[in-house]
Length: 585
Image 1 (tube, rainbow, N blue to C red):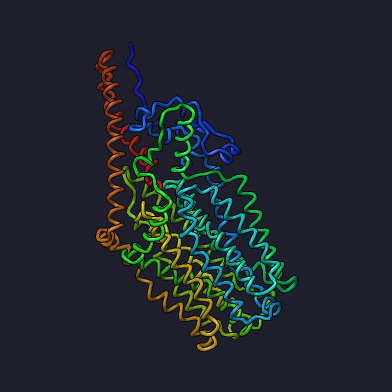
Image 2 (image 1 turned 90 degrees about the vertical axis):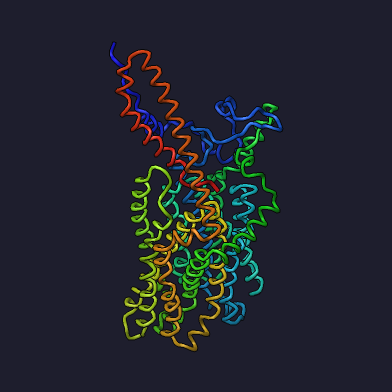
């Protein structure tokens, strides 16, 4: 009797992961309308526990679970990611679009130029509300309901702004629209982390961060001519239509993706259907959080990380300076191009094309760099690359940023062709996106379970700088002139240039001496060890079973199986780690 062919566990795992229909799928409308759909597999699964109050059944995701956000089809993941990016884009577009109509608003309401410029500052200041309010609410009630409510209110207030009888009403309504729309800042990043592992989230991060950075540049480009020809109300109307389209498409296509909420609802429905006690494993292991606990953590921990973790503090200041400089340009470009170069208002918005082209180039470079990171990740069986592997684009951008800003500052003489100073804005846009994408990924990898708090503090500081910089831009340019006025941000960027390089070289040592970074690394190591043990136990059990079967039929076949088992172990270990590189938040 011929020996049985060796079982290729690696091929089985890969085949199961790569087959299109290996996981049962729900129709999209079921995902959108129901957060607690129960399949036969879920109902019949043997959950850990005995179904009592003292020892409830512990509900978690199954291997082929159609409701697990990590196991969604790729086209659906990307559809959700792009819709979240569009929601982020629409709110950042609104932040700058009305600045194209500042002269018309000033004439219509008889307001001062300082008060009209304050509209952009108040709008950006409202972005600080997103991480402080909407992020904890999404942890309690899920991403979907927060998106529906906040984006509906954003669209409502944006439309109401058109009927503003005075400048005060316009400022208040725009602030409220931004405050509700700021949910996109925390929601989009949360949705991406819900669906992707650390290895695979690079491109998704580029989509939800890179696309929205085009919004502030796109606003003046799209709206300057509209403001001159039709007036400021048409500009605000365009913004409202953009918000409304994103909102209507979103409510039809965006399902819930936050695993803790989904598992809570699954456990509650199972309890109702069977009469036994089911609880989410996440709730049991991490403890169920009350609204007060969530808000306390969200309001306090970001400030703790911001002031006690030097990595978070220095990189947040760096990103805030870049963010503030970007919004400073909305007050500076009209001075440089309309007043100094005498461009008409209808075409002055085209001066933002250079920045926009640079941002697109920054996204393209980040996509190429993501391939480098994936190669490093694929070479590691257990764990993941060090966070510093994310910093290469930031190191490049740190060098090109001050070069671009100084270039713009000292080539914007009217006698020099305008395209020369536009090269400086291209470098600024490239550096801006490269640094942001790199630093966000670095903070997420370096702080894992505390990443939301690190990014929340970062977002608040950015919003404060983005609100403050436009307010002093005009007086600064009047006092210093367009050359030295433009050089201030360049000097600040030059002072921050060493930060990514320092953290690339000394980051591991610094993180070991930072409380939250060290704790995050400890938890990640513990998780990796648990997964290693689980993989080894599974392999050992399968190996023992196969050896027993082989010994009973053909001892030589069991001996011949040894090399293949070694190969299977490595493959399964890698497969397990591919699913667990990024802890769910």
